[in-house]
Amino acid sequence: MQAANIRQLWRIATAFFMLSDVARGLLPVYIGVRERRRIMIKELILSKTSIPILKKVLDISSARHKVIANNIANVATPGYRRQELSFEEELRKVTDSGLAVDRTHPGHLGGETTGSVEPEVYSPDDETMPNGINNVDIDKEMAALAQNHLIYYVSTRLLTMRINAIKMSIKGRE
Image (cartoon, rainbow, N blue to C red):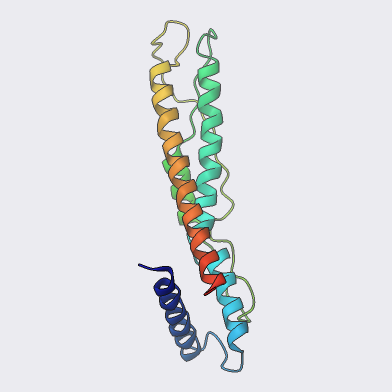
């Protein structure tokens, strides 16, 4: 699809959603088109998109990378207990922790949808010692590192695509 067609579709969708918001009473009729567009862009960027969740995914992935790197660095340390950060559990906390916030004015920003989830590092109850020194298995750690890298890479690509789409919609025709 050509960029001009995408921009035209975006303008039609913007007008449709603004009209439906006015009809539902979410935006007063007396607010001008520029003001409505500004409000919509704020909401698109800050609360109505996947951007806050992708940011949290990147934070969790970065923290998990540090934990895995620490495990790899201590592969030969006697008595070291490997640590983990459950990515899936932390992501579930992020997506389930949305707060319901009422807005008294259409210009007010909504609450943060990702909550304040902080990743927790824990040591699993794994007593096996694959290397005879501690419970760190270098092959499993390298596989976990590769998987975590893939999650981080995909998240950055999705975030970049989302931000570029927002930039393109703001720019409009040139």
